[in-house]
Image (cartoon, rainbow, N blue to C red; front, side):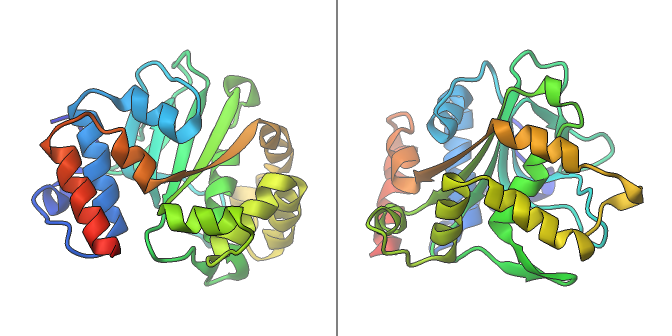
Length: 246
Protein backbone atom coordinates (compact mmCIF):
# COMPACT_ATOMS: atom_id res chain seq x y z
CA UNK A 1 0.00 0.00 0.00
CA UNK A 2 1.19 3.48 -0.83
CA UNK A 3 1.32 5.94 2.04
CA UNK A 4 -1.57 8.33 1.47
CA UNK A 5 -2.18 9.38 5.07
CA UNK A 6 -0.95 8.87 8.62
CA UNK A 7 -0.89 5.30 9.94
CA UNK A 8 -3.49 6.26 12.55
CA UNK A 9 -5.93 7.47 9.89
CA UNK A 10 -5.21 4.49 7.64
CA UNK A 11 -5.87 2.05 10.50
CA UNK A 12 -9.10 3.86 11.28
CA UNK A 13 -10.48 3.99 7.73
CA UNK A 14 -8.99 1.09 5.76
CA UNK A 15 -11.57 -1.50 6.86
CA UNK A 16 -14.45 0.88 7.51
CA UNK A 17 -17.61 0.43 5.44
CA UNK A 18 -19.18 3.42 3.73
CA UNK A 19 -22.73 3.48 5.13
CA UNK A 20 -23.49 7.15 5.80
CA UNK A 21 -22.60 10.51 4.28
CA UNK A 22 -19.11 10.34 5.73
CA UNK A 23 -17.09 12.61 3.41
CA UNK A 24 -13.74 11.77 5.04
CA UNK A 25 -14.29 8.05 4.42
CA UNK A 26 -15.55 8.64 0.87
CA UNK A 27 -12.50 10.75 -0.01
CA UNK A 28 -10.24 8.11 1.55
CA UNK A 29 -11.78 5.33 -0.56
CA UNK A 30 -11.54 7.40 -3.75
CA UNK A 31 -7.93 8.42 -3.15
CA UNK A 32 -6.97 4.87 -2.14
CA UNK A 33 -8.50 3.56 -5.39
CA UNK A 34 -6.43 5.97 -7.50
CA UNK A 35 -3.29 5.38 -5.46
CA UNK A 36 -3.54 1.59 -5.58
CA UNK A 37 -3.89 1.82 -9.37
CA UNK A 38 -0.83 4.14 -9.51
CA UNK A 39 -3.02 6.85 -11.03
CA UNK A 40 -2.18 9.77 -8.78
CA UNK A 41 -1.33 11.88 -11.85
CA UNK A 42 -4.77 11.19 -13.31
CA UNK A 43 -6.45 12.26 -10.06
CA UNK A 44 -4.37 15.44 -9.87
CA UNK A 45 -5.37 16.40 -13.40
CA UNK A 46 -9.04 15.76 -12.66
CA UNK A 47 -8.89 18.03 -9.62
CA UNK A 48 -6.82 20.83 -11.15
CA UNK A 49 -7.10 20.63 -14.92
CA UNK A 50 -3.32 20.37 -15.33
CA UNK A 51 -0.79 17.55 -15.23
CA UNK A 52 1.85 16.94 -12.57
CA UNK A 53 4.66 14.44 -12.93
CA UNK A 54 4.47 12.08 -9.94
CA UNK A 55 2.54 14.25 -7.46
CA UNK A 56 2.85 13.52 -3.74
CA UNK A 57 -0.55 13.18 -2.07
CA UNK A 58 -1.66 13.12 1.54
CA UNK A 59 -5.05 12.94 3.23
CA UNK A 60 -5.97 15.00 6.30
CA UNK A 61 -2.79 17.00 5.70
CA UNK A 62 -1.83 19.86 7.97
CA UNK A 63 0.11 22.81 6.55
CA UNK A 64 1.68 24.93 9.28
CA UNK A 65 -0.47 27.94 10.17
CA UNK A 66 1.20 31.36 10.28
CA UNK A 67 -1.79 32.92 12.07
CA UNK A 68 -1.58 33.66 15.76
CA UNK A 69 -4.33 32.01 17.88
CA UNK A 70 -5.18 29.55 15.08
CA UNK A 71 -4.13 25.90 14.95
CA UNK A 72 -3.02 24.12 11.80
CA UNK A 73 -5.66 23.75 9.11
CA UNK A 74 -6.78 20.18 8.43
CA UNK A 75 -7.02 19.69 4.65
CA UNK A 76 -9.11 16.88 3.22
CA UNK A 77 -6.37 16.32 0.63
CA UNK A 78 -3.12 17.97 -0.45
CA UNK A 79 -1.34 16.99 -3.66
CA UNK A 80 1.49 18.07 -5.92
CA UNK A 81 4.85 19.53 -4.96
CA UNK A 82 4.54 18.87 -1.25
CA UNK A 83 6.23 16.60 1.27
CA UNK A 84 5.73 15.51 4.85
CA UNK A 85 7.05 17.83 7.52
CA UNK A 86 9.71 16.08 9.55
CA UNK A 87 8.74 15.02 13.04
CA UNK A 88 4.99 15.03 12.32
CA UNK A 89 2.37 12.45 11.39
CA UNK A 90 0.27 14.66 9.12
CA UNK A 91 2.23 17.90 8.74
CA UNK A 92 3.17 18.97 5.21
CA UNK A 93 5.43 21.58 3.66
CA UNK A 94 6.22 22.81 0.18
CA UNK A 95 8.77 20.72 -1.73
CA UNK A 96 11.19 23.26 -3.19
CA UNK A 97 13.23 20.54 -4.91
CA UNK A 98 10.33 19.36 -7.05
CA UNK A 99 10.64 20.61 -10.63
CA UNK A 100 6.86 20.91 -10.89
CA UNK A 101 6.01 24.28 -9.34
CA UNK A 102 2.41 23.80 -8.30
CA UNK A 103 0.22 22.09 -5.71
CA UNK A 104 -3.40 21.47 -4.72
CA UNK A 105 -5.34 22.00 -1.50
CA UNK A 106 -8.76 20.32 -1.55
CA UNK A 107 -11.87 20.89 0.54
CA UNK A 108 -14.50 18.14 0.29
CA UNK A 109 -18.14 18.41 1.34
CA UNK A 110 -20.86 15.79 1.00
CA UNK A 111 -24.04 17.23 2.52
CA UNK A 112 -22.34 19.49 5.04
CA UNK A 113 -21.44 23.12 4.42
CA UNK A 114 -18.23 25.01 5.11
CA UNK A 115 -17.84 26.11 8.71
CA UNK A 116 -17.98 29.77 9.65
CA UNK A 117 -15.94 31.52 12.28
CA UNK A 118 -13.21 30.36 14.61
CA UNK A 119 -12.77 31.16 18.29
CA UNK A 120 -10.91 34.41 17.74
CA UNK A 121 -12.47 35.48 14.43
CA UNK A 122 -16.17 35.23 13.64
CA UNK A 123 -15.73 36.39 10.02
CA UNK A 124 -13.43 33.52 9.12
CA UNK A 125 -14.88 30.84 6.82
CA UNK A 126 -13.45 27.46 5.95
CA UNK A 127 -12.84 28.10 2.25
CA UNK A 128 -11.14 31.40 3.04
CA UNK A 129 -8.92 29.60 5.55
CA UNK A 130 -7.85 26.96 3.00
CA UNK A 131 -7.03 29.66 0.44
CA UNK A 132 -5.16 31.69 3.07
CA UNK A 133 -2.95 28.70 3.92
CA UNK A 134 -2.31 28.01 0.24
CA UNK A 135 -1.18 31.58 -0.43
CA UNK A 136 1.61 31.46 2.15
CA UNK A 137 2.45 27.74 1.83
CA UNK A 138 5.75 28.71 0.19
CA UNK A 139 7.67 31.75 1.43
CA UNK A 140 9.44 32.00 -1.93
CA UNK A 141 7.07 33.25 -4.68
CA UNK A 142 9.57 32.29 -7.38
CA UNK A 143 9.28 28.63 -6.36
CA UNK A 144 5.60 28.49 -7.37
CA UNK A 145 3.95 28.95 -10.76
CA UNK A 146 0.39 27.94 -9.86
CA UNK A 147 -1.69 27.37 -6.73
CA UNK A 148 -4.86 25.28 -6.93
CA UNK A 149 -7.71 25.18 -4.41
CA UNK A 150 -10.52 22.78 -5.31
CA UNK A 151 -13.99 22.17 -3.92
CA UNK A 152 -15.18 18.55 -4.17
CA UNK A 153 -18.94 18.10 -3.71
CA UNK A 154 -21.92 16.17 -5.07
CA UNK A 155 -22.97 17.20 -8.57
CA UNK A 156 -26.38 18.46 -7.43
CA UNK A 157 -24.83 21.31 -5.44
CA UNK A 158 -22.63 22.39 -8.33
CA UNK A 159 -25.71 22.25 -10.58
CA UNK A 160 -27.50 24.57 -8.13
CA UNK A 161 -24.55 26.98 -8.26
CA UNK A 162 -24.54 27.00 -12.05
CA UNK A 163 -28.28 27.74 -12.03
CA UNK A 164 -27.63 30.61 -9.57
CA UNK A 165 -29.69 28.75 -6.95
CA UNK A 166 -27.06 28.25 -4.26
CA UNK A 167 -28.12 25.86 -1.52
CA UNK A 168 -24.76 25.99 0.27
CA UNK A 169 -22.73 28.87 1.70
CA UNK A 170 -19.65 27.63 -0.14
CA UNK A 171 -21.48 28.28 -3.42
CA UNK A 172 -21.72 31.99 -2.62
CA UNK A 173 -18.11 32.26 -1.44
CA UNK A 174 -16.78 30.23 -4.38
CA UNK A 175 -18.63 32.57 -6.75
CA UNK A 176 -17.26 35.68 -5.05
CA UNK A 177 -13.69 34.45 -4.85
CA UNK A 178 -13.68 33.10 -8.43
CA UNK A 179 -15.03 36.29 -9.99
CA UNK A 180 -12.91 38.78 -8.02
CA UNK A 181 -9.76 37.76 -6.15
CA UNK A 182 -9.59 41.20 -4.52
CA UNK A 183 -12.45 40.04 -2.28
CA UNK A 184 -10.08 37.44 -0.82
CA UNK A 185 -7.47 40.12 -0.14
CA UNK A 186 -10.05 42.39 1.49
CA UNK A 187 -11.29 39.59 3.74
CA UNK A 188 -7.74 38.65 4.76
CA UNK A 189 -7.09 42.29 5.59
CA UNK A 190 -10.21 42.32 7.78
CA UNK A 191 -9.12 39.32 9.85
CA UNK A 192 -5.65 40.69 10.63
CA UNK A 193 -6.71 42.43 13.83
CA UNK A 194 -8.13 39.19 15.23
CA UNK A 195 -5.73 36.70 13.62
CA UNK A 196 -2.40 38.54 13.24
CA UNK A 197 0.73 36.93 11.90
CA UNK A 198 2.83 34.88 14.27
CA UNK A 199 6.14 36.27 15.52
CA UNK A 200 5.43 39.70 14.00
CA UNK A 201 5.76 38.30 10.49
CA UNK A 202 4.44 40.34 7.58
CA UNK A 203 3.21 38.02 4.85
CA UNK A 204 0.86 40.50 3.17
CA UNK A 205 3.18 41.16 0.22
CA UNK A 206 3.67 37.40 -0.24
CA UNK A 207 -0.09 36.85 -0.37
CA UNK A 208 -0.56 39.70 -2.84
CA UNK A 209 2.07 38.12 -5.10
CA UNK A 210 0.81 34.56 -4.81
CA UNK A 211 -2.86 35.38 -5.32
CA UNK A 212 -2.01 36.07 -8.98
CA UNK A 213 -1.21 32.37 -9.27
CA UNK A 214 -4.40 31.12 -7.59
CA UNK A 215 -6.93 29.02 -9.50
CA UNK A 216 -10.15 27.82 -7.90
CA UNK A 217 -11.89 24.70 -9.20
CA UNK A 218 -15.13 22.93 -8.41
CA UNK A 219 -15.16 19.20 -9.15
CA UNK A 220 -17.86 16.66 -8.32
CA UNK A 221 -17.66 13.29 -6.60
CA UNK A 222 -19.44 11.82 -9.59
CA UNK A 223 -16.64 12.95 -11.92
CA UNK A 224 -13.80 11.47 -9.88
CA UNK A 225 -15.66 8.23 -9.09
CA UNK A 226 -16.47 7.69 -12.77
CA UNK A 227 -12.78 8.03 -13.72
CA UNK A 228 -11.51 5.41 -11.25
CA UNK A 229 -9.93 2.53 -13.16
CA UNK A 230 -12.55 -0.03 -14.11
CA UNK A 231 -12.63 -2.64 -11.36
CA UNK A 232 -14.82 -3.88 -8.53
CA UNK A 233 -13.71 -1.03 -6.27
CA UNK A 234 -15.05 1.61 -8.64
CA UNK A 235 -18.41 -0.12 -8.92
CA UNK A 236 -18.56 -0.61 -5.16
CA UNK A 237 -17.89 3.07 -4.45
CA UNK A 238 -20.26 4.20 -7.20
CA UNK A 239 -23.15 1.98 -6.11
CA UNK A 240 -22.83 2.82 -2.40
CA UNK A 241 -22.44 6.54 -3.13
CA UNK A 242 -25.57 6.57 -5.28
CA UNK A 243 -27.57 4.52 -2.76
CA UNK A 244 -26.66 6.80 0.13
CA UNK A 245 -27.54 9.91 -1.90
CA UNK A 246 -30.97 8.48 -2.68
